[in-house]
Length: 422
Image (cartoon, rainbow, N blue to C red; front, side, top):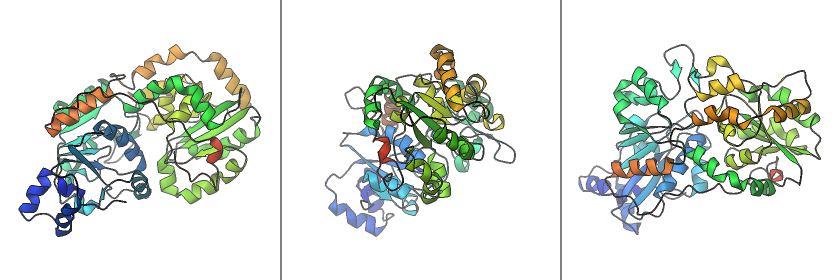
């Protein structure tokens, strides 16, 4: 992992060095930099989920030699895998305590924890599809991501709040009017990447190793006690025992917080038998989006990945959809009221065939349109916002939405072989 101190190259950092307010080791390392005088962008990576979301944003700064991007990782309950994630990127990483003593030209965060200590114009973003989950009871009650403590961490106003849809403005006006003037409807990067990649479905299926005529079931889980992972002990035997292995393959897409919370060893231990029987256990660092596009069915819950699955045209079953945990004004609530629910008493194959016959793509149009009100325009909107706050002109080219890369074969994701990353 590259040494940190790269931020000593920014103009603001140079002035702080001259004023004697920067650590000596940071200042000393400036002599080893090749490009100096760059503006510095700090990416605040709390968890792997947050980090993967910000990578789509940071790609909009590629090829701009005027900028240096650095990363930092605040303490977080689900942050254990972040150092390995950043190491795979080969990124310049600042220790959190050092990052909070420095000044940056821009900061990006997909979560609120600790960001009030960052000295920079801050853009906050959601880390998933829309704002789907509701916290019940206590001082933290409300819609996660739209509560006052999420929008005003430490009571501090950010420079900008990026939201995916105009409908969020109504909730901001009601619950936290102070940030309404700072809100920018920028769209959703995952929506745009999936939509741009749909024509590559056949290529993704070949890359996964699916044979001609073979069907793929994606079993999807968010995290938490009411997620579908909490019912995997009942679902997994059905996926193993009721689907003929010659004609069906299964991929398990489990939220990174499950892996971080229980430990990768434990999750792999729970799922070891599944891998031995040919089920693809997709690791948290892999890009799940191309696998979702390749799926013939999705068995999901109330999380973001299931909601993004409505973009693919795959029929879906909901293994769980806890009403108390779903934001009632979100598209997840509409999906829960519309999508068929997995039955514990009917054969799984019979249910898959039923939902395939009954599925009508147009019936999910209202759900898909609620994910973003700026379809295909996230890159344009987000890049414009970042460069405005940086006080710089944008690069003179269209910010193209690049299709997703091909996934690894399903057989690569089994215990003992699943450590490979996407």
